Image 1 (tube, rainbow, N blue to C red):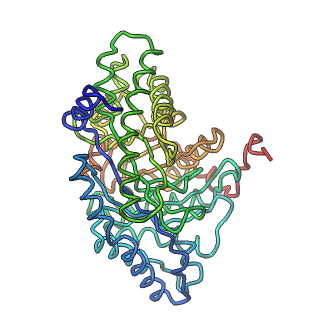
Image 2 (image 1 turned 180 degrees about the vertical axis):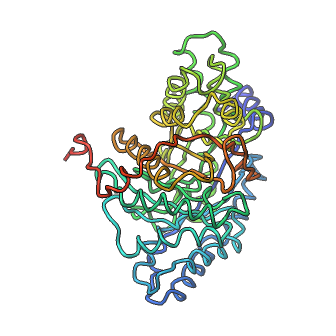
Image 3 (image 1 turned 90 degrees about the horizontal axis):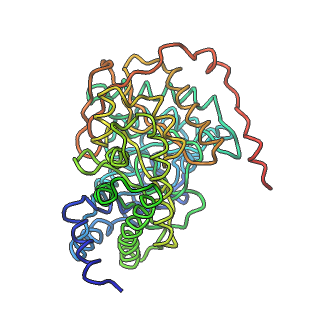
Length: 452
């Protein structure tokens, strides 16, 4: 039972602390859209997305208006297109991406994810064609997001795929150079990708999912930051308890929105992803939460420990609030999307190496990081491999979303606008890993993967 204090606290979280539902994402199975003719397959994809998601925007808008809860993004995720297009003739899968883009526009959503492939053990012909199509597909569409899973704790790391994705990232940057290489902001390389993630750019509707599902992603770094201001000087035990209680309230709101959307759309309720997803707005930063714990600047010594506490407390609090917690759930550290991270990176305190260490304990990985445009494909592939190794060994989801900003160098910035924010170009090591990447093959799964 809510009392007056609970209601007032919630109103304050919505009004002054940037609490929002970051996304309501509808997942749609497209396996029945397969067809030997590429154009027929693309048309089926368009038709089914429009049919299933035609009411997503009006329902989300009505919930937003009735409950007074901001829903920032309405999105769609689909079956990995490499599976759908497996039977289609033709090397270039861009026509399917174009159909996805048209469908997303028709439904009025912000993004559509699922131009994806799962290649942790190897590539099918459909996987190969999709990966080779990514640069053109992302350059010629606006709302389509792509992802490739190259590793897992059970399968190890596909290093041939890592090398290929290094080249794909470079080519995507070149093809969208006139827009700040924004194509790379819509491409994620995963290890241990999850099938019910509602957040872009890595969302796809996995093979184990139902015909259709509603997944909700909540946020609220500003709420946690405000709560911690009342705990200055307190021991970490009390800090963790305060974060857990705050995460509980945030997740309860997500649960309400998810169940309401599910009922009105007649679609199964999937999960609530309780990740703390920052924005470039002042007061909505994960970095500022870490600094509130006592760090002078995010990225200094102690940052990884502070992030570990935050991530764990968020998960514990959320699990008490919902029986359907899923997706990634924890704390995101996308540099360009977090006002505090941007400041720390510009100061030089927050480096790519420190961010890599932080990814051992956060929700995902190296996210929305701009690097010099002349960074070699082999260096990008090696960064991808490093992050995949963290995910593989620690049995967690990790990801890389790097933007080699064409024509820019360290000290420059690239502005994507909106939630994607501004990315300061960060230095990477110049010593070459080319011989390492050229070996190819497979890094075997760790010994603790053998659990059966």
